[in-house]
Amino acid sequence: MPFKIVRNDLTKMQVDAIVNTANPKPKYSSGTDTAVYKAAGEEELLVERKKIGYMNEGEVAITLGFKLPAKYIIHAVSPRYINGISGEEKRLRDCYKKSLALAAQYECKSIAFPLIATGSFGYPKEEGMRIALDEINAFLMKQDMLVYLVVFDTAATKLGLNLYPDLKAYIDHNYVCDKREEEYGDRYFGSVRSDEPGYDTYRRERADLETKVKNASKNVQIGVSVEMLSCQSIRRELSVADSLGECAMAPSALCAPIQKESEAFDEFDDAYYDFLEEHESALEERMKHMSDTFQEYLMYLIGIKKLTNAEVYKKAIVTKQLFSKIKLNPDYHPDKATAMRLCVGARLNLDETKDLLARAGYALSPCDKRDIIFSFFIEHEVFDMIEIDIALEEHGLPCFID
Image 1 (cartoon, helix red, strand yellow):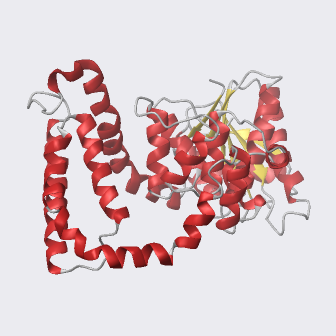
Image 2: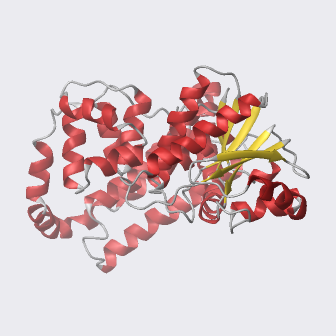
């Protein structure tokens, strides 16, 4: 694969060349620049950098890598982001375009870029990514080179550390359990043997769910508010029950406690209908869009979330041209990857995502790890295509961004 997005330290990349976000003056700045000089050997590298002299934004130059694993360092002077219409885009494109050309001139077979200018220089991350992809893809159409885009910053690292343990558990539950049922069929439906993979996870999840059901019943008896026990929350518990049932449990074992206490909910009927009346206009509005096409429903959701079109296509990392094509054609049928990216761009929750995808004829499959990882980020409201693609790359799966 000629292009990869990875979470790593740029100075540790085993490539022919790394690209450093250089200071225009022959000295180094904070951040990536400092890290590169320290890892390469600052005295030796500074001597070579001073030979190059002052560089303008968008210009590049090359030196040896010295103590780095990389043979060369390509120094690219990042543009500072002003307002997006002051020539920053051209200068940023030049950083990628000229760096790739210089690497090819020096017969490099591999190169690693940081996401140039998106740190302290203030370039919006999604826009910076779109520009990087444009220039890298244009280069790879004509040249053979392995290109890495290295994402390594405090926020991204913290996000990864916080999310990834949960992501592993999420995949184990949503994928492995389905595979168990697929492998064994109905023979073990309703029970899990202690020697099966995932047994401990299953026992813990079953115990947690049974505790939730018991607590829900107690709360009804002591008169908890209807907002806490609306039909929506009950459906959520039943949905969890069904999900575990599909993995390994008999649904009747879970539904029985709820059915047993069903009479206890009767006293909340009046409050429940008051709740419905209060939200009637919102429900009616949703009902009007039941027959919408993918494009029509997407534009409706963007409207109710009060997002601009630019916010959506930039967050989704799709081009303005593609988004305009979708917007102007009510019958537009996107491929699944594009549809999923637009769900991220529009910051949809999981129900909205499933609904929108269904209008294009797609579903999130429990037998597809790519779909499961995507669902995990949606559920956690991490609307970040770069983070999603890093997770896919680290699991050996195809990325969305191309």
